[in-house]
Amino acid sequence: MTNATIATPRRARGGRAVRTGPLLAPAVTLLLLWMIVPLAMTLWFSLQRYNLLNPMVTGFAGLRNYELLFTTSAIWISIWNTLVLVGSVLIVTIVFGVFFAVLFDQPFFGRDVARLLVIAPFFVMPTVSALIWKNLLMHPVNGLFAWIAKSLGFPAVDWFTNLPMTSIVIIVAWQWIPFATLILLTAMQSLDREQMEAARMDGAKGPAMLWHIVLPHLMRPISVVVMIECIFLLAVFAEIQVTTSGGPGTQTSTLTYFIYIKALLRWDVGGASAAGVVAIVLANIVAAFLIRTVARNLDK
Image 1 (cartoon, rainbow, N blue to C red):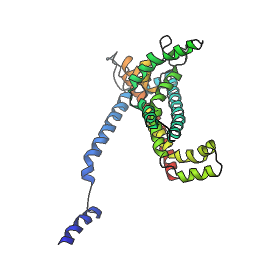
Image 2: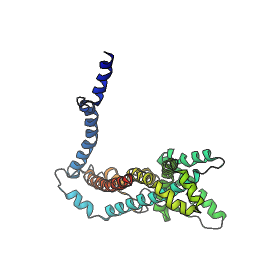
Image 3: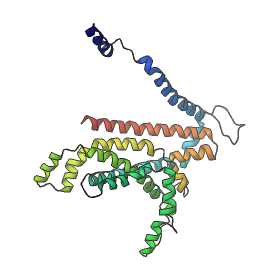
Image 4: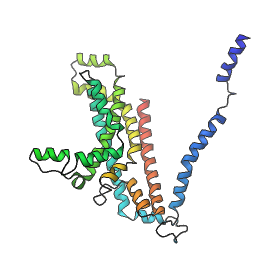
């Protein structure tokens, strides 16, 4: 009887008779509704004449919203700015993430405190981060950078007027370098120390060890960092709204900010929905490319 009692749950766990579909159905259904309903509504509104400033103009517009969208230069500028922002932040975060991961993997006095300080910016809210950089660091009169420049005899830089996109890249990269550092530093813990010692005994120097041992080991986590960061960087908004409001002109207007202007400043729901569909297509193209890259790195 004891053997039968023990064997029954084993058969239940390993047998084909156990059906998990009914248990997963509510969660899967909720997830599908959460994804499909907003997407369907966006597609529907993108095909409608729907402007809250002129509610009398309604009806089916077909592809007219898309035609008007792609005939304006603002959408192409926004797409280009989005790609520049995402690409620049990824390069900066990966370079500094690898640097800090290698640095903080070495034993030195106060290493735990230094690790805590370098990871801390990741927990600062984007709006607060943008306000700190705008008013305390990059302000052309009262900012820290202006005071340093004047102390050295150089003119202060008006960052958000003369270097708007560079300013946004610096602010966003400052927030995401800790994330890359945390992931890559964790990956450094699994690096084969015996291989490192053997390379040192063979006369390998720091740059050669970095290029031939450390970077190949970090390729998988770097791919994961790039994929996760891309998901969030495509939706950067608070830093732009607080600092430049998409300006000067359209120099820092990304696709996300362009949709915000269309929907909430011009009340053009149809045009904003069409731009939202373009953003979805762009995000899926980037995601498909990144997933393939990550899959290749995981297969190695």
